[in-house]
Length: 121
Image (tube, rainbow, N blue to C red):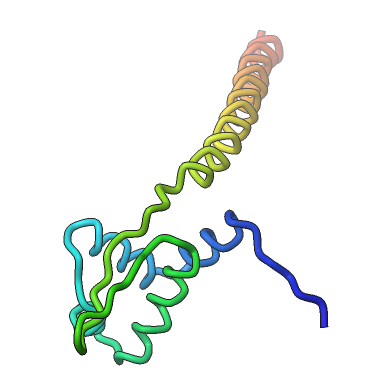
């Protein structure tokens, strides 16, 4: 069997592709929380929340610490700089393409207006 290690961007975007996990990140941005607290807040089982937190932890977006019977979650050390840079490159690319499309549409509208005047004259 071939072993495949996922690139950090793949792992991050996969982790963030789920609405619950994005909600967990937002919640932990406000305050650290136990898995029990998170499970209650998101109306899910402890097992379900542990799986979500595990995926976020593998991506480096969340860290957990177990003290006694309580596992506390907090934001991880990763700050999503690589992910933000990747998104920014594509945002700029799309902005440029849409700006060019706007120019084409405006030119077509201008020609349509001019052609309409010629036909009525």
